[in-house]
Image (cartoon, rainbow, N blue to C red; front, side, top):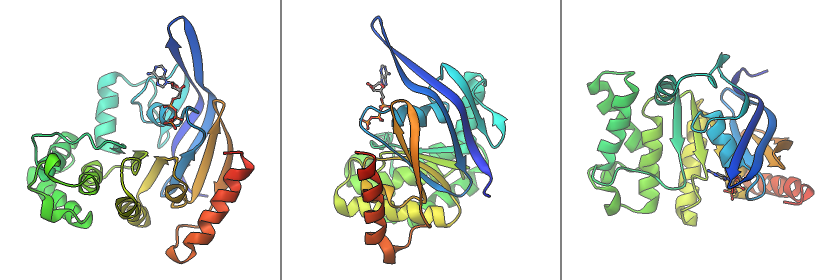
Length: 253
Ligand SMILES: Nc1ncnc2c1ncn2[C@@H]1O[C@H](COP(=O)(O)OP(=O)(O)OP(=O)(O)O)[C@@H](O)[C@H]1O
């Protein structure tokens, strides 16, 4: 049995909308395992992003606990949490959130310096290697506005990976990309996972979800089902997507 990297116990999240209260996460128990590519799916508005933000400490929860590698993190101060996020977590979102007046390389470097795991020289070397691995090396000296959406997202993945995160969180990482760029980004995430990177990704996209080896289905504030798959294999892609599609149909997705 794989080790648990992240655990949520009875996570409750309530949003206040005017006088009304919406309980978006209703006492969720969840375990994410080391080296897995875990995917969260579910209907729109089910709370997938909220769950991701709650588990990663970006959102405060109203009840329950989050443990990262066995350490309780839900009670950390804002400062301690910010440090943990910088050192242990990587984030990729639908929008890249690259700093517009910094080049792609500088965007990755800044994130590396914040993490403070390595010397400036080592960060620089790793940043260049990552941009090469993400196939965006040629564009490294351009500003985000001077590159394609796919290149920007690949640079954003390099930025997320610069601190050698224990866990990479991805919220709809392909949501703003065309088909070719989607495939490329999914290929990069798959490669990272094959190298041992633990990933937790939220997606609506069946193809993106099929890259995972474990898919959780969130509905009505609960994780109501899950599907386990063999690690992704390109040769069986169609069969895999059919399996995920059938599973989702059974959940009336
Ligand atoms: N900051 C907020 N304040 C109030 N309500 C919020 C806030 N953020 C999210 N919500 C509400 O919480 C619910 C869950 O939102 P969330 O974005 O987590 O869902 P989701 O499953 O990721 O949706 P989608 O698939 O459409 O992105 C929604 O009803 C949303 O309107």
